[in-house]
Image 1: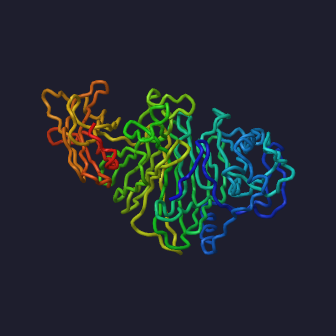
Image 2 (image 1 turned 30 degrees about the vertical axis):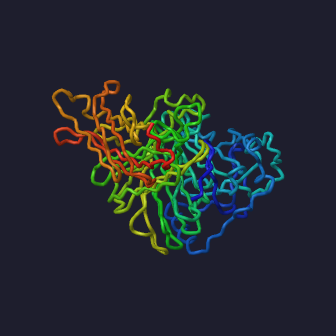
Image 3 (image 1 turned 90 degrees about the vertical axis):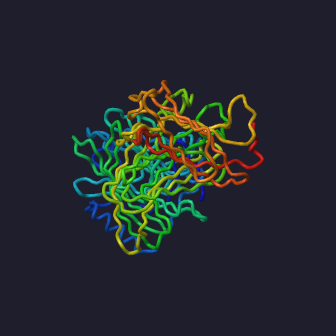
Length: 531
């Protein structure tokens, strides 16, 4: 699989269709972006028709069509290009929302067509040099094509016109902020053939339609047309900012050909180093990650927590389920002292929860963890893979909500894992006779604070797929009003195959905690010193 070298404030762009040939027409408001051509009737049914029609045509890539002067921009040149906020879409309309546009260049080399929808009528928004300040980029706006297009758009709300609440930058990725006003992990429309022994396919949003909202509306409707060699798709987003930013999404897919591994609601994040994995702990900061775990709420009602890691080799995990209730990549650790980064504020990074709107049937949440050497690589991917393959020539519907914010809309009623720490095993003060790896797992919440350990026996149920578990203990941890479980894992001699661990706390036959899952890769034999 090809890793995505994403900068923290951006995402890779994707293929798109060029602007249609049309004459420019100036809107009555001179500050507004210009429109292209005549208005056309538009709604979600119209978009689905466009996607279905496009799927019957051979895929056309428009890669390499960008003018050389734009495609050659370096980091500093691209960063000097700014959008003129006086030209924001709906900037003078006294609405809750306004939209600003991203210029093409750097990683964003494939144009996206943008449209405005007013009263069911859509018109394309024209690229215009007057929309941008080109700074030190070296670009001369009047020399650029009139149909250049955009790299994407961002949204501002009336309560804060300077900081954006969502960004669709590049043709594939999008992100949003919750009440902490901090970007972090990303989402995308679809994943195809992720973690297979061939290059991954990145379906792209080739066009967006922004529907002008009612002045009293707290939500904005955006439509997207998806295109790739394997499929097309029609997407409808209802965007509602808040302490948790909610994206209500309906997707209709029209495959061109069979797809081996389809990823619905794919999430993309970064994990370099943390309390449980210090393999790449060569930085002055104690922890570096956008997310620290994968959370699952299964169709049967079980709550699962799977800490993330930065493995030596690519890891691919499958969590089978039937009609999942939700899953997400979360940033549970929100303590600044654990990161010490006053520039990018990892403790403020949003969690992202996927909530299916209807039964998804049988399938699996799939997790990909890719080795990374630093924080500029997004190395974590999670998505839903339906068991039933999608069929070319048919329509396939999926509906779900994305919740961006510090706390997901659903939380386990049981105690949750608040920290996972690992290190060399054995007994302090005694000579170690063999290699083992220590796990210290902290749980808090639920009913743990109500338990009197002098009258209630707490059982730590630890199971392993290979090797043996020893020195298991569970004791109160008053600092968090919870419990700490400690145990050592002794891996089989010589084998580096992954080992799957499972842990729960119980008392009197009652489960007290969510299920903690972990995958441990033993180090090479040469790194298994007993001391």
